[in-house]
Amino acid sequence: MHLIHVTDRSAGGDCRDSVGGSPFLPAGATVPRCRLCEQPMVLFFQFDVREDFGVPFQAGSHFLAFMCPKHNDAAWLEEAYNDSPLPAEFWNGDSGHYAFLLYPPGVLQSDGQLDPYIAPYELEFSAATEAIEQDIGFARGATDAFKIGGLPGWLNYAPDKRCACGGQMAFLCQVPENFGFCKLPEAAEQPDGFSSDEYGLLLGNMVFVLGCDRQCDPRAMIAICDN
Image (cartoon, rainbow, N blue to C red; front, side, top):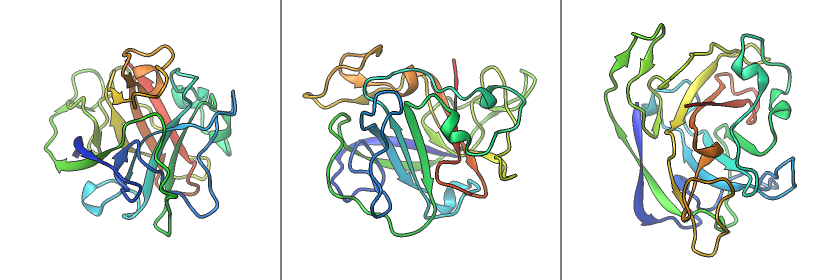
């Protein structure tokens, strides 16, 4: 696994590994909008996938995590929390206030416009060895940290999901419970948040991000919340 570290270095519009910052997207693509209120979403973090991360996604892919600034709730896609298969275009059936995207290697671009909510800082990554726990009926990573790869730190269950295309929904990264993303001073306080000067992702739950290992579509991602 690789631990994700938020540095104290400001991220400019050319930084591809950041909290906040300027999102790297395909030409013509725009920041996703909340399906509940049509507000442009907040960029919480983004990073390029490296080969040494050891995750089953193409090196050079780019991941972005967005959520609505007004709707702060846990992720919800019914099929992600039970044994039923994921339906076609399952990303259109979630609660609509968040968007996790994994673009394959290719030309992405930033317009240089920084996210107006999250303070932009560069990310760094460090390889680490993870202890594995198996005393709760399934294997889980013992490192409940902001990380890429390894084993998810499952708390209550360990779902085994396949994409509608047949690909395995593989673990990419996790965000720990009540992990704070520093907000810009001029940004509004987050509704239902746990801090007056930070934003939390998906109501501050422990968040596990899984994606189709065939990368059939950039939207073929699920977020599973646990606490």
